[in-house]
Image (cartoon, rainbow, N blue to C red; front, side, top):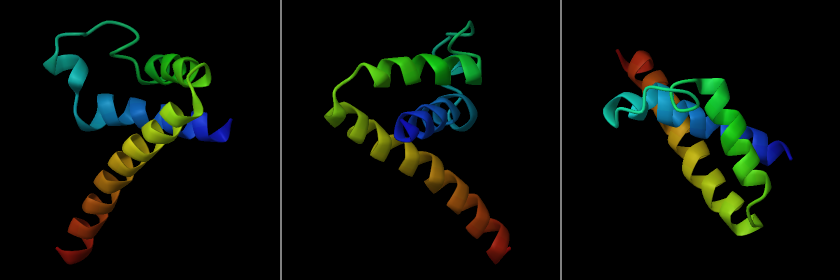
Length: 79
């Protein structure tokens, strides 16, 4: 259950905060433009999806979000 929560939050932040895909794809309405709304819907989808899909989504979105955080931290450390 905690894996679903972390994955859905990271997926929402990945789409909304890092890439702004709701603006690029002109989907500026809920649940796509709202971080908590998108996280809730992604969580529901992941809850009813097979374990393999959850594992793949976890690897993709958690690593994508943490990669952006680590890149920012490394930039601040070295400059």
